[in-house]
Image 1 (cartoon, rainbow, N blue to C red):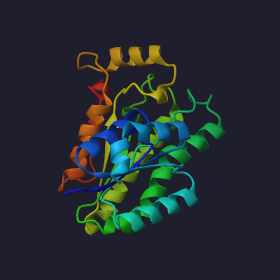
Image 2: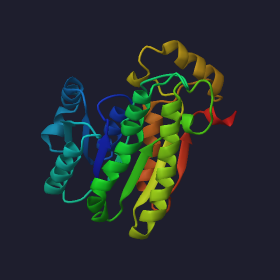
Image 3: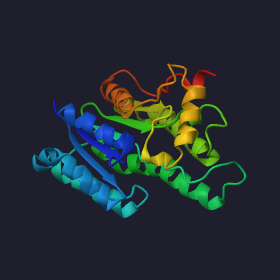
Length: 247
């Protein structure tokens, strides 16, 4: 049965992999990103799904309240409900601890923690109309330990907060049948890392105990698909990190 899925930040990296996975599962996907060129490229890559009405890719920012309301209106008008909400969009804007500016902290928390809460908040009535609603938040192995290879303190703190938000919402929304879980990836090479290829290689070599291999977008997609369908799982933080957090 076709599910209605909304994925934030689905135009590149892990998000683009999630779009592919849900489309291959036969679902209808709404996604958005801040860069028009990336949105256009995603639409071109999945032209058949766009033409069939199975993919809606929009230019938008989860931190923009007006956009969130417009997205809610579009999903409500076209689909009537929402089965799966995936909070994937995130940024790493700085490195360090006390070196990070308050502007870095505000931007990181706004995108990585506050925006996921705001998106859940605005979509809650559509999730309540689903027969099997699920929210999946994308956390990080950086939320679990203060490793030096997690270069941004504000990013690690934001992801740790997202995991507590996951548990709090799982407790609050469980009586309504809404499951809330999170996936915590290890190192997934993606555009978010920018030019830090050497850091990626060092981190994988030091922390990924499973043959020192990177985690792939497909690995994360498989975990997200599982949590989207797992009827008796809520409040879980599923580490898909090749053993990153074992040490």
